[in-house]
Length: 107
Image 1 (cartoon, one colour):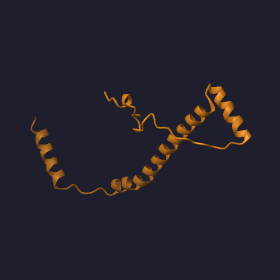
Image 2 (cartoon, rainbow, N blue to C red; image 1 turned 90 degrees about the vertical axis):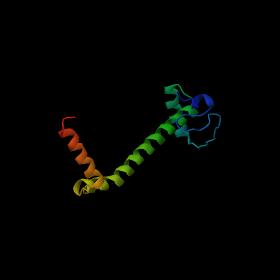
Image 3 (tube, rainbow, N blue to C red; image 1 turned 180 degrees about the horizontal axis):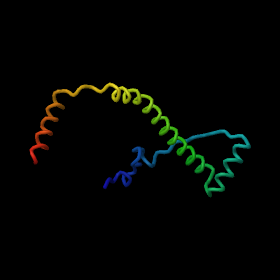
Image 4 (tube, rainbow, N blue to C red; image 1 turned 120 degrees about the vertical axis):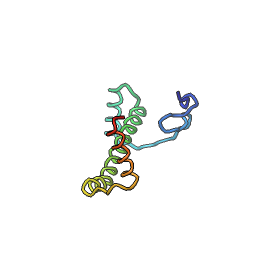
């Protein structure tokens, strides 16, 4: 079992738990009231609510963007492979012959 969490590391991204960074934001009155109300409803401080919400939104954004980039980049290659498959090379042909020999001989 990995011991990384016990050594002061976050297992997810290997950032030391003791290292903290400051983040400042300016809010207008309406934004502050909205965020404070939501934080109160969840029983959190404003800071905890904002950090938790920002982290969740960041993870969703990164995941969504990564899927879109992979899908856009790989869709064309996948379609090309389906529509114009490459001919099997000598290694694959040899493996196919060996497989047929083994499976047809009753082993």
